[in-house]
Image (cartoon, rainbow, N blue to C red; front, side, top):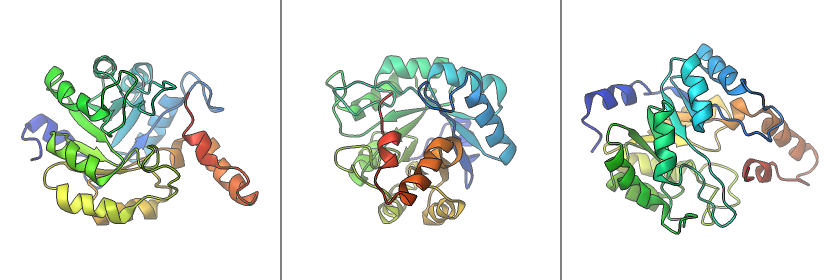
Length: 249
């Protein structure tokens, strides 16, 4: 069942039908500068976005100080022995919360973490440790979405579709499967479309299919990847821009 907490509910309802912009940058990105994520967030607010998704305590704090929009916070931590990198530990979740995030996003897939736990096992621990936080379960399949809903995630989205062994080499969103998730879980959690959305028209399709809100990142805030998509096609797909998108930093 969707949260009955009035404060959480008010924030989540404010997202309805709107755009959340993922404003993230890594130190090895060609667009990196100390204030680039703040500029991204300010541009998103100017455009009418209803929220921001941001990575790392440092960047969350910077955006929070400059832009008055709710923040979905996460902490990407990469290890060579796992593909779990989105807020993989309770300590990382605490850092995200203390940095000022309103919502904590975490990997809720079936993958094994660096700590040799199953990723989704963190969700109940997080809900117990920080009960005032809204939780966003990043999943990759219908079964993972079902489990996350049953475990009490407030928001659920296929953020990791294409980033797990089970879904690797995916180029386009599975809108049919997402629609199924919305039909079956939409009255129990806020269903969010995130991943592989590159046009306003595609975002609108997701709203019609039942998404409460849509998160878009690369198509808006990562111009080097947008340019690379064009180059890859013009060169006859001799290179794959997704390798750069999925790279560990």
